[in-house]
Every structure is written in structure tokens, then in C-alpha cells.
Length: 177
Figure 1 (cartoon, rainbow, N blue to C red):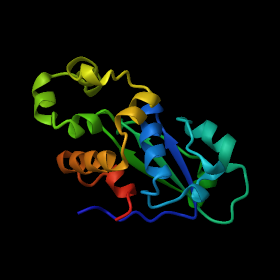
Figure 2 (cartoon, rainbow, N blue to C red):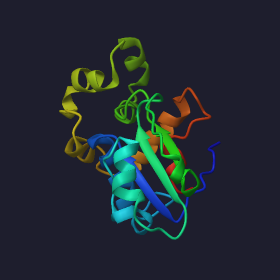
Figure 3 (tube, rainbow, N blue to C red):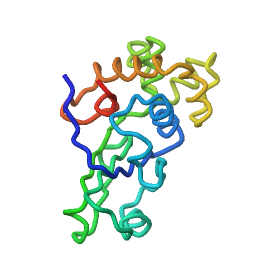
């Protein structure tokens, strides 16, 4: 069972890297997310890891309501400390893809058990053991691999099933039911 996400009217979705952005672009373009492009600040995903630079770029603008900041990241340890001035104006939601977004490809290929026994990082496993994919951890590689939205959604569901910490939000929480 997935936890329900309550989002504000205004959303800032921060994607850690190109692979994360590609996944989110596929989901957004195919209207599979619980929010739309119209909800996104500036109508796009943001690449901005630091809280300080995010504040300076985006929070100084006037918004008529709260902002949900959705962070798509593979680390549970990254701090995103917002100034106390903005604390009651934002909600920060971390979508953890630990250990890496490449886990979606591993699940899509049905290679989870082989990956687990390999001792490799997910990106190494994709590049070395799944060579036929010609995967190089780039935006275009992810777009090319997930050539249908169903392939991506099925991988997200499979990944969520194996997720260690069910109390964390995952990409599944961002999908429409």
C-alpha cells in the first residue's frame, strides 16, 4: 500500500540528475503524475541541489499559497535546510531512489537477483552486465530505454515492491492511482 501525498497548488520538483529528469519527463508528458505541468513552478523540473540557491532563485517570488518542494534523489543523507523565514510557506518531500535511479532499469530487465549477487553499484551493473542497452547514465539513454510509459510504470512498481524502507516516499507515490 502506498502513502498518500498531499501537495500544494505550487510545486517545485527538483531532479538530482539527467536520469531522474528523464524519468520525470516521461511521467509528466504522459499525464501519469498526481500533478501537472501547470502546477510546476516555471512549468518545468528544476536542477538545483542546494537549499540556499533554491531560496534565492525561487522563494523570493510571490506565491498565493504554500509550495511543495519535491526532491528526486538517491541519497537519504542530503540536507536541504530552508531558512526559518520560509518554513511555514513550504513542504519538502523527498522521493528516494536509493541506491540509484538505475534500479528501475534493473527491475525492468528482471535482473534484480543477479544485480544483488553482483556486488556492483546499479550504474556499474547497467553499464557492464546490461551492455546491450548501451546505457551511459544520460538523459537520452533513459528516454530511449523507457520507450513506453507502461514499461516505466511497471519498473517503478517492481522497484517499490523491493524497497527496503516503506516509510519513505518513492516514485510510486507520485503516480496517479
